[in-house]
Amino acid sequence: MKKAAVRAAVHRFISRLLEVEEDFDDNTSLAQLGLDKEDIEELIFHLEDELGLTAFTAEEDQMLKTAMTVNDLSRFLLRIGRH
Image (cartoon, rainbow, N blue to C red; front, side):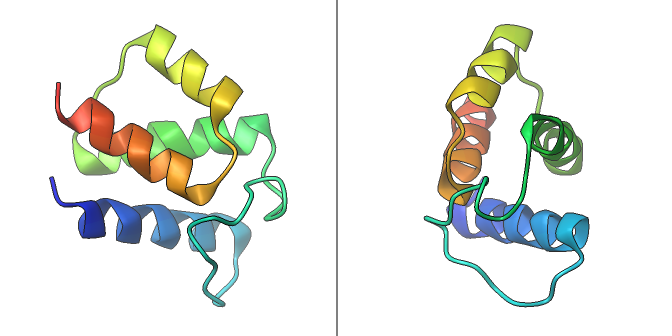
């Protein structure tokens, strides 16, 4: 799985969820974008499905606690893609 493809998927889904067309930086805070815990959980589940990935529940729970930026989501998806 390529980093650019994962990054594009994360940006595309966040843009759809927020209904915005302007781009945002990978280091943008998820909270700054207006995403709450439920939004982040939805993002994780949708992106896992879209990318054909599966994470352990403990991994997803940890991600929900530690995800601070858009880049954190991309790194998480790349990490579980290596399983």
